[in-house]
Length: 124
Image (tube, rainbow, N blue to C red; front, side):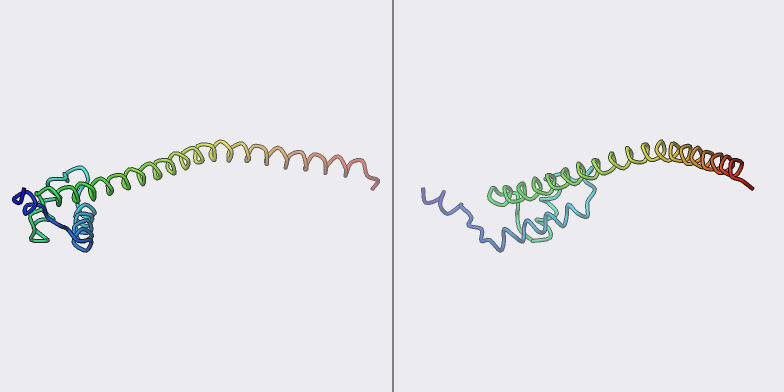
């Protein structure tokens, strides 16, 4: 029992925050296609000069990685939504723009025709 208690590591909030910030910094500068939790943990261990492969630290690193990935996915979803909306607007804009040009031309022709008719029917 005493050995188990001695092995437990108490992590204060400042250290926990420092670990999470370090992992986040590593993830920001890394390719999300190549970085893994293990690589991030190893880099953070090196930067902090602390063995983060032990359980209480490992969990903190995992939380930081999961949080970063969740935010990245939400950002990607948002950007994809914006891109989809922009693409739809662009496609609609082209159709609308062409339709507007055609409508404008027709209106101009009507006005010109009406003006000619008015001039012909008005006494000179």
